[in-house]
Amino acid sequence: MQIGVELMTQRAWTILPGASFTITILWDQVKMPSSIGKDIFYEAGMILPDKILTGTGRIHHISEVTINRFEPLQSKHCRLVSCPKDSPSTLHLDITVPKSGMVDTIYQTTFIKMWKRKDSATQNTVLYFDPQSVQHIRNNQFQIDLSHWLKQGSISD
Image 1 (cartoon, rainbow, N blue to C red):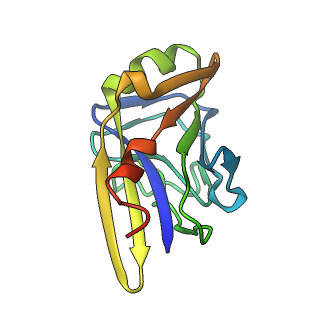
Image 2 (image 1 turned 180 degrees about the horizontal axis):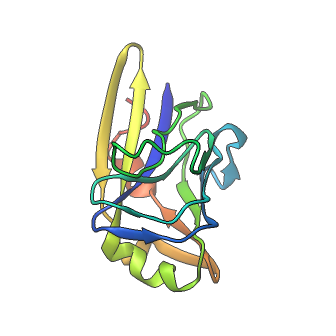
């Protein structure tokens, strides 16, 4: 089975040059190295609602050279990564945003899209932030506990 995660906008986001977002899946409190995703915006712009801020499994640079001015500004889709064979007892996302002030508003302005591929079927699930599941790590870094998603059988089935 493979999974991937995207941090999506609910509202329009203003992006300043040099903004960087990082996202990683923690499987039983261990970082899955292949899940590390980073998006670096070298150009200022506006990301519209329902567009991708960052996603797992790849590094993406958004610059004058890579922007298609005929399409809305957003990052690339996540890359799905292979899961360990054993189901986890805990599942977390580790997210770093450009500024510490964004952490407090991110719950109201973004949501998570979880992707799962098993055999040849790919599904996605939209997850909204529960402030009680968020743990602040540093000024601009936090973890989201998605272990409740495991209880629904979403990973193991």
